[in-house]
Amino acid sequence: MSSSEADCLFCKIVEGDVPSTPVYENGTTYAFRDINPQARVHVLVVARQHHEDAGALAGDDPALLADVILAGVEVARQEGIEESGYRLVFNTGDDAGRTVFHAHLHVLGGEQLGLFGRPG
Image 1 (cartoon, helix red, strand yellow):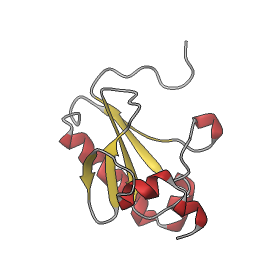
Image 2 (image 1 turned 60 degrees about the horizontal axis):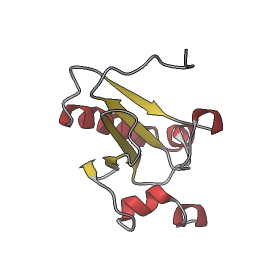
Image 3 (image 1 turned 180 degrees about the horizontal axis):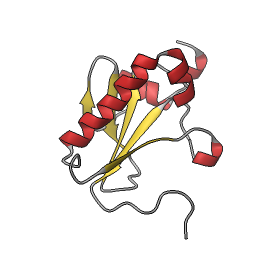
C-alpha cells in the first residue's frame, strides 16, 4: 500500500479500520452512508482499490468504473429511489468540492433535488 493509500480515509473505511454504516458491498465496491448527507438518501460508493479520482479510475480500470456505477444503481434500488429518481455524482478537483482523494460516487435522492449547477 502506498503512503497516499495508507493515509486515505476511504481506504481505511474499506479495510474496516474506520467505522462506517454499510449499505451495499460486493467484491469490487463498498457503499456506505455519507456522514454529512446532502439529501435524504446520500450514499458513497467506492472502489475497493485506490484510484485518486474518476478520471484515474476510468483510465486505469474502466471495468471497475462500471462496477462502481452499477453498485450506485443497486444502492438506488435498495434505498427505494430507483423509480422516483436519483443523482449519481463524481466530484473531481477543488472547484467541485472534492475533499477525499479516492474516487467515490455519490448516490443522492429520496427527495426533490435542487437545480444542478450554480445557485440562484
